[in-house]
Length: 519
Image (cartoon, rainbow, N blue to C red; front, side, top):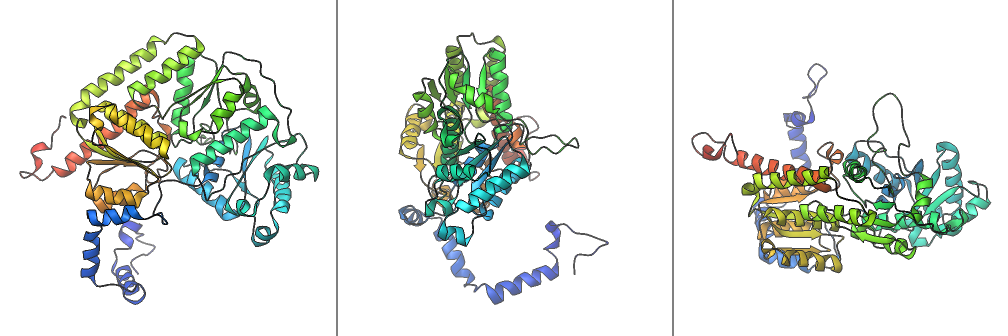
């Protein structure tokens, strides 16, 4: 065989060896029911046409490669943001393996999550016994300060009542009566990971403020001058939350991050294993009821949570992934207004540096056409920034975007001369995006790792911004919010533009007239 102990080949070369090539050829011939290559090529070209695009957009009962994940993933995201809290998913072990691996592959950190291990018998008779045993095992083995329960498809289809199950489990002695167990119903067959985030965060806040599951008494509000902050489901949570903390501290504003995942997904290698690290303390979560206001960085991640908070007497303000200068201006001015403070000169200088960087690079971005896909708030924030740069976000697609998001996106396009040829696509998937990239080509595509297949198929260069990013490392450590975040996004876009220019102009004495040293 090609591989041997004296000369170990990595996979880049191993599968190009003659033995493997012969094996793969035999597999295709014997098992894959190959079609006529000419017919395959004809169909390949046909799916690039407007005729096929119309048929593609006419489908209703099929989704192909949606740009979203399921609700429980968002619930697990919320849980790890609280002090010594372990996510407990009422469902099968396979589902939990997916959530853990998805986060671990993106953040390059282990992600703790347990399951009630529901199997066929629980699917028929209900999962109460699984809950009783699972909570007891989790409490005794992992010594958490709080357990955050969510559900999967199986538990939701049979109608398991989490509130009743948790109360029964406490009566059975699984956990102490006064132990903190939050819950949220997060059916994976509807909504997406941002819906799951919203449901789970609402569940945590309801638990501490309204005394859910019989654990705590309903709290009375004693207003103070602090501000609560909700980041939403965010693949850049490590860098973003640290940047937000810096901004609040620079402004001298008292704040509480509701769900702080920045440490648990960025633990040091120093010989100590940390199952739990950092996170919003449970005391802070309870005292957050007294805040003057709550700011959400992602409107469509907190559609249920913010009304709950507003009902408790707080002002609530929602943003859409502020990346642009204008969006960050609004964010910082809102903090200053609510807290009654002046905006520090340090932040004003940061703003000026971002404006200067945009001016330095505008010639390379102006007029470029972009396609964007991802979560609704991220798409909005990126499109707003591109319009500010003089680029055209020609195609903006969010599988988990709704009619309200579509209307807001269209209003954004209408507000700029660069948005007149831009279109928004709510509820569409990446197979729709593939058609659009063929029939309405753009210069660059912005999205998560799964866009690399679109890049390969359509030749559209991919700029990796979003969640998940599996095939590049450590992006989550750098903010995309605020002036510094805008700078990072600007540099990321420019690097891809320059790399693409260099790759297409590098043949000596033929195309290298633009293979410049200085740009």
